[in-house]
Image (cartoon, rainbow, N blue to C red; front, side, top):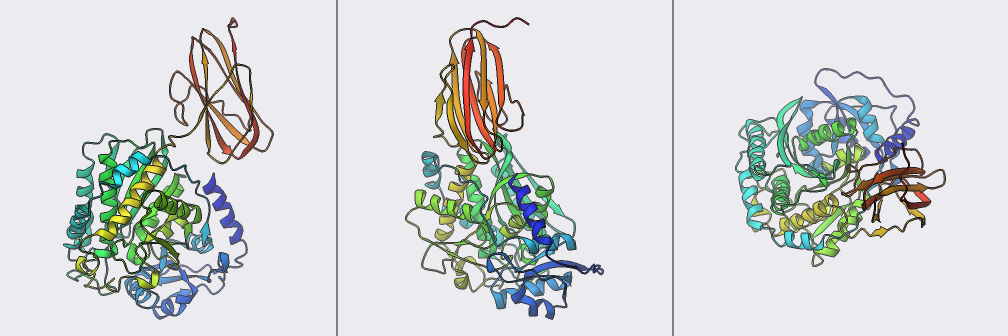
Length: 516
């Protein structure tokens, strides 16, 4: 539902664009979007800008440009973006003009994420105490052993294969886990995905990821030295340690968790865009996405920097609350990183809630990025800085993928309504009703028009969005479930399909079972 609202808002803004050139792509060309402050850079690389497109960014953000450019200029453009704008990427590649226009219309920030109650203290505290810096170091060392991980080279392909085997090994004895490589149509490097299937809400997805590729700019070819220790072997290593700990917990998440290593980030966020757009087209319910891009160079005095552009403000706030709760010894600040600075922008542009905790202020970024000197020795050879991000990632995964263990359960009394109930989108309230003998049980909800409360009831079993004996599927907040059952306990869930107010729920028992 939330994704639909974003899409509607997006197309509402597109109506103000005016006439758009119907320029066809020539062979080898692609569409890109970028900040207006990079106009001279894309022009120098032969870009053809849509002159009829002028769109003032939301929240007074600089104008966004839509242009077409030959794809053999992308690596060079990335290099110049990094040198002048200090952005990793700084632009997004799109397969057609429509998708480029949609990306240009996305707001700078959204506030869609519904913050869960932080309640899994024992689990999170136990897991973050087990974060092992040496594991992070080992993964960084393995990834930097490849000459480079560029999206078109044989070693870039081999790095993806290696990580797929590494992640597959981590989950090999876990029944609810699977791994795969994701092919992309226009380049050979594959993205890698691990899925931990949710037990209660498998259709709800929580994601974490980083990018697999490395670069030293337009001259990156076979044999070019591009270790990419910080950018972004550190993010992949951090995600790998979070995966290890989630498996070690022995807990199957209530919601599905996906771990990603994206291909081709350095040339327009291409791998993450493919993935995010595919899930969007499938109408997948992705609740939150955490991006880990450079986690092992502490360039600023504080520990973590949360970027506020192309992110979800509620999710960013939730991550700061996780830090305050579980790693309060660490400090954090906020900053902006500019247009399409990492893969979180792909998810944001697909209408999903995303956030990126960065290793430093933007102006304090590791000076060795995109050079042969981006080595472990030139970031943090102890991985103590990346360890902080692994702890945050684990807290995020636990608290977003597991139900609130402190959700109050109210016991209903026969014939006595509970009135004045209200809730937001997808919020859940729980009740029970117990009988001591066989009879007819009626459980009803009622409420005014405009809201939409959904009723779920289970007899002698757990109740959830996917586990129920009765789910009336009616519009609005007026629904009823009737059972003829022996003595037992009825578990009831009230879930907001839309916001609702002033709803009542009542359970009644009739010992006389009506005859058929």
